[in-house]
Length: 233
Image 1: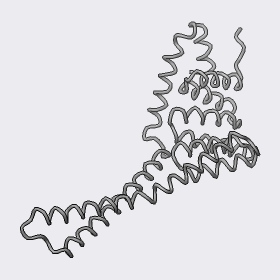
Image 2: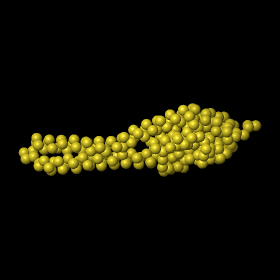
Image 3: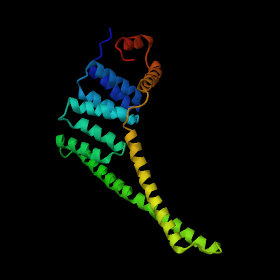
Image 4: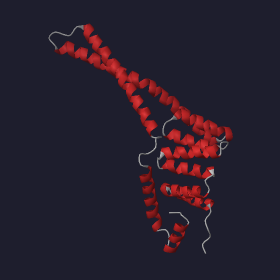
């Protein structure tokens, strides 16, 4: 008779799937482990990692938060949260999450490295945020000056210099505004990465179908029946 699998056994299957790069299958195993023992933060932390690898950032963040809720004095949940925030370019939040993790696991080289990396990206992003609007303004000035030169060279009666100066200023302001709008768009896109997917049930069905297709060739019919009885698929 086949020995009944424990939540830890199922989690280990998830870990094996992660090592093989089979993240959809890993999510299914971790989900089953959570059904069997829903108060274990490690299962949520591991599933957060698998979701992150699938670029399912909303689910990854929710699992990281649940891991923190179940173990607020553990480093792993905060670290996973920081990883999701870094991947979605929320660098300020990522730094705070990594620093929380460091409080519970001081001098950890991995966490320290992530903090330094997040800080570098934060400073770079801040510079870009400041420079892009002014770059747009500079492009506007160049276009305005080009118009002045073309007007002077190719018109019989050039436009009054004050009018052309005003046109240049207006184009420069428009360029600055376009730069601002572009950065605002980028920030909104980052925020959208952490919003709930439109069709959660459809996504789950796709994951299950993919896992079922992969596992059909791995097990005999008797083994498959045992796995179904245990709720693994």
